[in-house]
Length: 269
Length: 204
Image 1 (cartoon, rainbow over the protein chains, first blue to last red):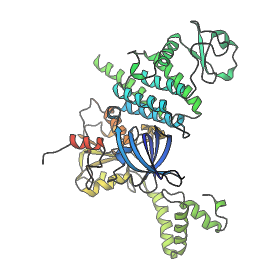
Image 2: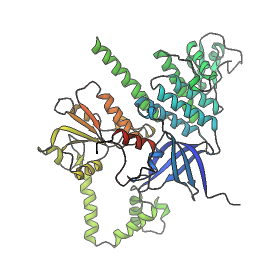
Image 3: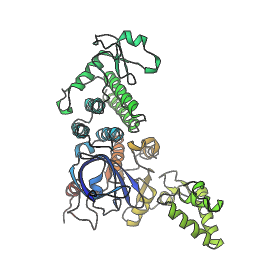
Image 4: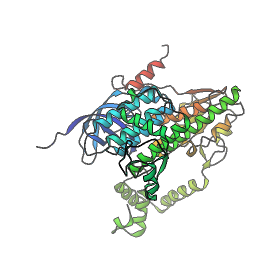
């Protein structure tokens, strides 16, 4: 029997791109189907009914019709708009970074409920605390975990001995943390980077919590936050095999926030 | 489409089809139709088309003030002494200037960004005409900046970026009203559009 012509999906919009005269090509991450691409016909016309529901970072309930190459979106209803996230520039940029990673790691082969739940939880957490560093760090580590790429944080990846406090090294290509002895013997190909003890502790803390809402209210100082950001974005980028494009604007914002804050401090003094 | 895909067409025709196929919204079939249409045009009309493309590439430049596309800098809007120099309206695209001019309800100046901040496409503030905007606001002549970026996620992000840079200045920063389009329908509107329409409601 032929599959039905129409189907339903609950999906998060990851991105959209113009297609033809007035259509949009939408990339979605659906609870029932995983990643899929579909066309919203006429969505770029001013009176289009679909376009408001299909903005990136919106969770929608959709009706789709199977097409020859791409499916067509026939109806859309917003389930969650993530308004607090979209009202803050830092939060929305982090949200787009999350969407880019989901687009890269999400598979068209089938559903991935843990990844969708993690993504929705992270978008909610980012809306609540746009400036907090933990939600995005947690997302990146859990993304690696639900994708089967979790770095080893308890034992040395080479000798398998439990890690004692010391001058550890970390390698995305090597699959996790190297103890000082194994790091000294490792080849240059594994591209080791220093890993502070505090950063290792934060990584273990993030790995223990499945949901960002359950994270303790931990504030990271700037060097620690930078170390963890560099380590996790380097790892996600390594497994993705391509540059994460939204990273540049995220870095630009962090830099301009720092400049504005120091200028404000100078004015106050 | 490459020349190898058009083995039966004459090389010059194949090249024309290939070039037309590079235009936005023009697929291989449309490119072929346009190419054959151009062949059937009288010589003078085909030459006019070629000359128009040449002229636009040679003469069009950015206005030194508003960054709109123009063949004389400053552009006619910036050079017009009747325009209100206390207002600047920031738009994404030169076509947005034409759309706003058609309304006849805005008499200020413009600033064209030539795009929006689009992190997913790797487009940041440095790729836009933003660095040309902030010096225009520095001398205190401009009293209001109207942000007229599109009400999309990227348009809103660009608006937030501009507003964030102007925090603490005396400039009045506004953006166009959000809400229901003329001819639209409440029933099919999304929650964000409706809530913004409610926030921006006016006395009847």
